[in-house]
Length: 356
Ligand SMILES: Nc1ncnc2c1ncn2[C@@H]1O[C@H](COP(=O)(O)OP(=O)(O)O)[C@@H](O)[C@H]1O
Ligand SMILES: [Mg+2]
Image (tube, rainbow, N blue to C red; front, side):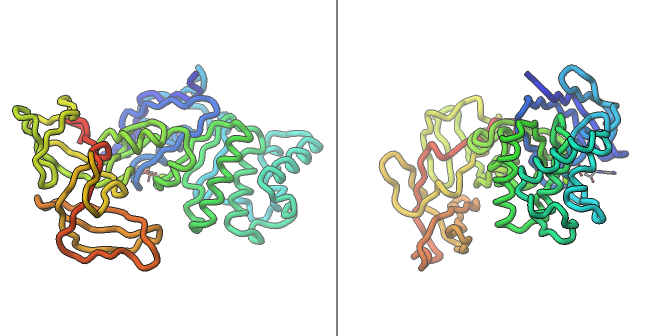
């Protein structure tokens, strides 16, 4: 059962088309993330759902109610936006109570609810503090408690963790997942960080230049990217061009001429060029094991990336490739120059024609 329906939504600012015919359904209780680079239209879509931005065309439905032109306060959504700051002169408890006072809840019910929300975000001891006396992570927890206090029909969150440092962001991601699980509220979440989207979402909707280019569960987005933008930017894959001969069934792939029987003929472009991808972690220095494919590459550079090393490689036909490797404390024993690498054919993907 679809809870929120976004149907052919468009938004233009003069000549800028911020959203082009966006259609997306969200199920009740689902955690859906809008993922895309800066300027791809994520905030515009979230603000349209919130009611702060009026779409140029299309509809937004909640259940079977058309809410496209409903006032934001009548939508009963909870917001946590970038810069949607706490009231600095109000205590933590009064910040959380604010939406309840606006809704004229009785005093005793407000008090009980504030205590419940403080416990939910683990800030019982901070109830009387002012926002300035809290850390960034604690302030963001208060903002979450305030947005959840009145029992919103849905939560809308726009990059709520982007101002926090790396380790705090990781723990807040877990906290947000827990809040989602414990409240059962539907979450529509915006981020430009693919790891954050992978870690938190039931489903990811990928945005590129105002368009929704793919939506699906995180593992599906990662394993079966629909186009080169998703494969490259979102999936962090190596993209390469190969040439396929439909008569012989052979393919020129990174300096090798191969027979790839499983390659779907539906994937081929008319001129025989195909775009493929290889995961950096699937490209491994060393000779091929049985069933693997061996590539003769050139190692141009090595950089240390904390969790491992990144090898900057080039194929005989001049295409750049990156291999990531876990490495020990002394680093890899490679020198720039010719290098043999292996990859399993299952770790090479090809993109559908026309969508590359
Ligand atoms: N109020 C506005 N006036 C004019 N252009 C805008 C306005 N808001 C957003 N845009 C443009 O719409 C596009 C999408 O913006 P936005 O939704 O903020 O992207 P994102 O949140 O993905 O970074 C961008 O090109 C942006 O410059
Ligand atoms: Mg934005």
